[in-house]
Length: 251
Ligand code: SAH
Image 1 (cartoon, rainbow, N blue to C red):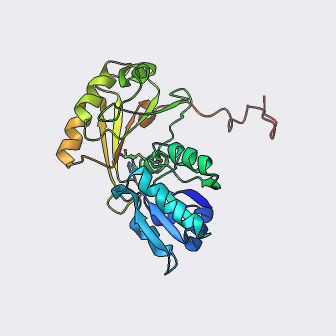
Image 2: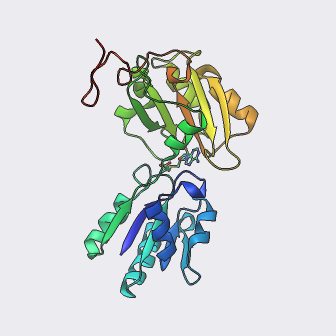
Image 3: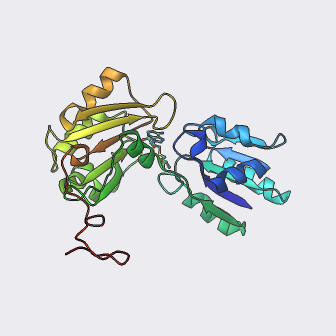
C-alpha cells in the first residue's frame, strides 16, 4: 500500500501523529527533498529505503512504488505541508488506480498555516476579510488565465501567494492592479516553522525590495491583506449578546 503523507511545513514535530506512525513503519519513503525537513527521515526504521523525489521523474517514483508493492511492502510518499496544495499527487494517484494499487492520504499542516502562526495572524478577521485566496504567480509553470494574480487581487481578500518568491517584482505589480494599494500590509514568511524562519513585515509597495534586502529568493510565502493591520471587529461567536446553538445571548 502507498500512503501519501503531509510532512507539515518544516518543524519535524508538526507532522501528525498518524503521519509519524506511517513514517516509522514504512519500508520505502519517497520524500520531496526540496522542501521536506530531512530530520523527519530520522523516524524511519533502519532497513527503510529512502528516495529523494526532487531528483526523480514521475515514472521513476511510480517504478519505486511498483517494486515495493510487488514485494508486499509499504511506501510513504512524503509531501511538504499538505499534499493537496501543489503536491502533484493526482497524477500519482491516477497511475496507482490504473494499476490497482491501494493508497490513502494523510493530511499535514500546510505552510500557509505555518506562516499564519509565524505572524500570529488570523486570516479571517471579522469586518476585514472572510476569505483566503491561495494562489501563485504564473512562471515556468502556467496558471489558468482566468486566475491571473491581478484578477485574484481584485477582491481585496486575504491572499497567500505560493511558489512566487523569485518573481516578487511581478507579484507586487499584479497585486497593485487589483484592490490593494502600496500601503496595504504584507508579510514575507521564509521557511515558516524551520529554525531559520524569517518574517518580513512590509507593504504591497515594498514586497520586492524587502525580500531583496533580506536575500530571500525561495521557500517563502507572501501574505497580503488588511488582516495584518491592528483594526478589526469583535467576533459574533464570542460576543455576550450573541445567541449560538451552545449558549444563550444576553440580549
Ligand atoms: N504542499 C505544500 C506546498 C508545496 S509548493 C504546502 O501545503 O505548504 C512549495 C511552495 O510552498 C514553496 O515555493 C513556498 O512558496 C511554500 N512553502 C513550503 N514550505 C514553506 C515554509 N516552511 N515556509 C514558507 N513557504 C513554504
